[in-house]
Length: 271
Image (cartoon, rainbow, N blue to C red):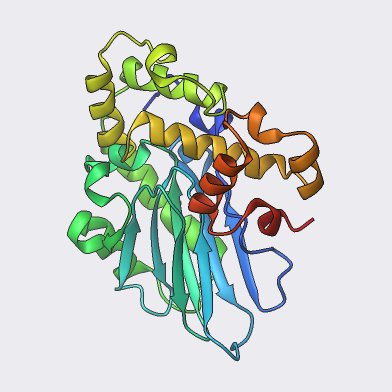
């Protein structure tokens, strides 16, 4: 399988709401096999170190990706989370051990031939979307397994699946995707995404492979670029970062940031 655009090289989605050093809850990411790294961004684990005194609320920020996830104690209950254009908050129990697979943009659809727009802005039982994958998780993964072993099992499964799959390297889609990523989402969609098809056709491609329009995806890419830059509250005020990344004013910037993250930039960066 070969896709002309190296998405991983251009896009590194992050989920920053859990700090690795958290005393009660940990979040870890591991890379898949090298042969899968142009398809899967990471395998991840979110778990408690000890039973919490109160329920935990996990906030997932918009990252442009599609994830498969499940509780390791109940692998038969597995789900897929589609592209989201705003943050999502999950109320979790006092104790949990979640495992996930994060696919790079377009790759869930390439691998499973699922219209990404059908699962956008929500999560769905994986058994209703990709039954074979749901059965694999239920039959092969269980409580007590370490992330290293889970990675090995997923690597074997996905490498075999890739061998049997045909990928569509549509240069109209991936050309537009590359422009968006190279410009960190700061562009005029109608003027700058001239890849040889109409805006209507481009919209259909993005909705099918990404889960939303090129415009919405660009906004998420821009937001993710800001997260990776980790600006301080002081620099946000003094350097007017919101102008540099294409926002009209500070109010517009704060409103969109809160939509994607769930809190204001000053609270998110905390300094």
